[in-house]
Length: 140
Image (cartoon, rainbow, N blue to C red; front, side, top):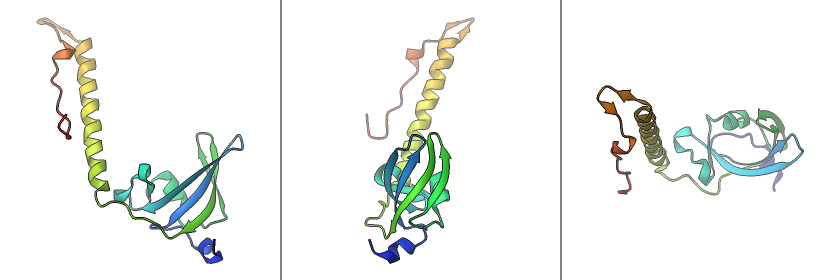
């Protein structure tokens, strides 16, 4: 790694390699690009700048160990800061919105089933199986 890449401060658009340090002394290596929140897709290596991890890393540089108290993690060792090797897909925001709608629909269905299974009225009990299932956006 060139010395100049270690001097770069982490900003939106940087590829960052970190080790999460846990209380047992173990390390977990992560490699991601910090992107605007609307382009975030952590499953594909794009961390949103507004996430707790993104916020703590912005402005830091490689070679720094930053305190980060989350579950069993106590610090982040910033290993490298470089230019990204790839860009997020243009449809990340659309995918996130679709996933959010699907999750909301699942929560609403669950709430309706809980209500239906716990309610008894003067005209009889509700049958949770009678609640219509909406089709998913992929046609299933």
